Structure formats: structure tokens, C-alpha cells
Length: 202
Image 1: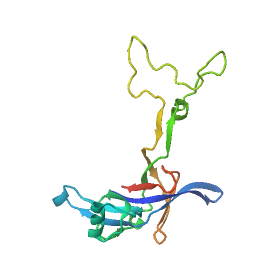
Image 2 (image 1 turned 90 degrees about the horizontal axis):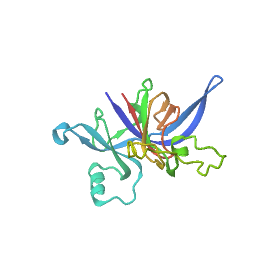
Image 3 (image 1 turned 45 degrees about the vertical axis):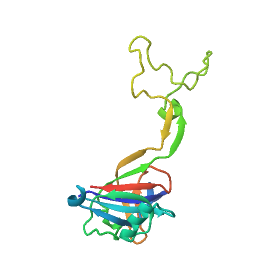
Image 4 (image 1 turned 30 degrees about the vertical axis):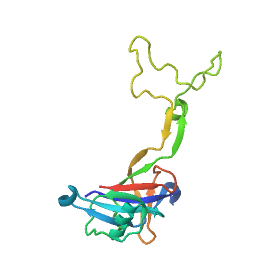
């Protein structure tokens, strides 16, 4: 059965296995508060709507009513996760639902880097720096005039880089601390420190 939970990226560190240093990422997984339990009879599919992230100071009236109905404090994000056994509105889903022996997939919003050129965005090598070259960091030719007479779709060019959702698959769980709501994974995960990440298993 698929399992998912949301947490906040704290940052990277390392642990030692003998003389070998292992890079790890620490995620704070505060209990996801259940706002609504969706059923196949009423909604057409099964899911659990949870409130995650920092507390929201001024929710809209519609959101405030939704949180009030389930007696949950307004939070920054509302997300859906697969159904959990015994889930009821007002309850919580903790990091303890994860199995330490099973690999996880982590999704997050990577850092936005603004408008970037082809060398920075796509690792182009650029042009030579001598013999009268005036364009050192440009992409070069992007198409022909007569045939095909156009620029192909998905041509790698300069443009907006980052600020998109990325998923890193098959990360090993190093440790789970249910009391402190801490999850430690081997390797790096997408997103900036403090960013919301989705941990999926199964």
C-alpha cells in the first residue's frame, strides 16, 4: 500500500560508519493534521487531506471554515496523501507510519535561479576565447534557414532555470525518531532548507 507524508527540509549533515562518512539529509516531519477524509462514495476517490507547514496568520473565510470544521489550526499548505487506516478529521499522521526498511521517493521544489544562459543552465562548453571570437558564452547555431526552416521544439536554450518540482527516487532511511519528529535519509533531496517536501513509500 502506498504511503505518503509531508515534512520540512532541515539541512544536510553526515554520519560515520566506521571510517566512512555518509552524507545524510535531516527532515523534520511534524504530525500532518487531518482536515478531511475523502471517500469513494462522496468524492469518487479515497484520500486524506492534511494541513502541513507553518501556521497561517490570516486564512480566507473559506479556508478558515474548512479548518474550523475539523478543529485544526490553519496552516500554510493543504495537501492530499493516500488513505491511512483509522484516519478521522482532527487526527494526526506521524512519521511512524514509514517503514525504515523500505526505500522512499522525495519530491520538492528546487531553488529558483532566475534567467540563466546555456552554459549555466545546460552545461554547454561555450566558444573559444581567441581568434577574434566576440560571442564566448552563446549557444551557437540553433537551426538552418532553408531546411527545416524553423527551430525544433525543446531546443536547449537560455531561459528560466529552477523553481520546479523534482523527485529523487530510492533513498534509504537511516533513522526515524518518532519522539522528535525527525527523519534522516541517505543522500541529498531537492529544495532549499525550510522547504516543504513529500516523502512517498510503496
